[in-house]
Image 1 (cartoon, helix red, strand yellow):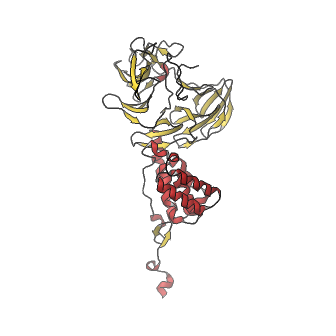
Image 2 (cartoon, rainbow, N blue to C red; image 1 turned 45 degrees about the horizontal axis):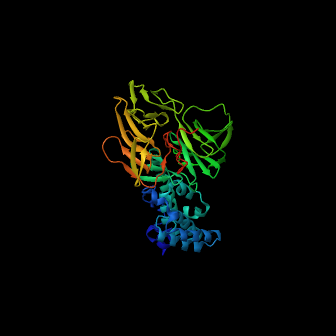
Image 3 (tube, one colour; image 1 turned 90 degrees about the vertical axis):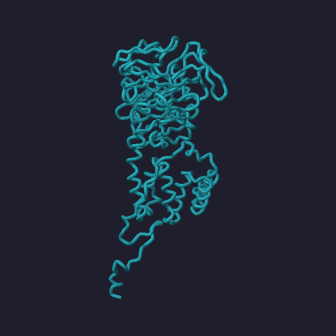
Length: 443
């Protein structure tokens, strides 16, 4: 009896906290294992068009009515129909917390937080409904998991290429083959400008534009600030300089929108958005590249300053100067070439339809001047380097990863384009299927 009254260690029963059996005094011993961040396929983000969405709509209606037990029931149904419905997983975690079922919060919370770390993981640490859960040992373990995953998440963003798909921006980590969603605009993104690990993205809903910022160094995306077009966007030290004719603003990386001097345009590449929503990129001049550029930024030949080699494409082909891109090790330079002034010399078949090939992606070896053609397109092409030996090419059927040398291209299904707008040959009519692709020769 004396020992029991004193509460010896062997007599203290374990206690149950949020689904884990925890010996008294050993809360710090709980750990949640790491899970792969992001999703393995781009299509997995499309839960709004899958079988779990009707039940999720019912859950949203119950949430509006404050009927949290009904939210639990509907979200459970949604996840049974679609186990990767991340919105349903998040709402289910909140509903469990609201109904006091703290022992059920962790599983859906981990699903949502790992699948879309940028949206749900950090948000979970400050959501009022989860405060009681976070005070439990397993909640503290979740907090540690979120903190531990942050470095890996930001490293993945930093090495990713940024791809447009269904009107949104996604970061694709080629090394790990994982997708991370960057914007959530209901499919309104039409173009973006990347400057290192910072991006400005442009949305369009009917005739109204918006512009937001993405900082890949901290994983933060701002909401789009409403504005009018046409627009000119240039990277600045603290964000992006945005012109609207004689009016200029600064968009900071935290989303702050302030007035700027129109005459103080920073130097560097500019993303130009026409009043109709067509995007083109003005990059010239390019380091160590000289040419006799015409008014459309086209040239029959370029000189590589580091080796003095002159590179040209077969006449009457022209090199699009605003598509030039050095490889990370500066051993090669890639560009899009216009093949012919009449655009009828070559032909390719896309989805069973034969159309003239008007443009090609070409890589020049800086040391030798040797040219290597990677692919051709009909409606336009854009190219970016993934690493020293691999390129991302956006063309007629979406984005492909193309190795430099031997090896077959890898298609990325469901993709629309890269951050870089497509270059369309000036001798072809404007392409109206996707306004975001634009034409490099449009005023």
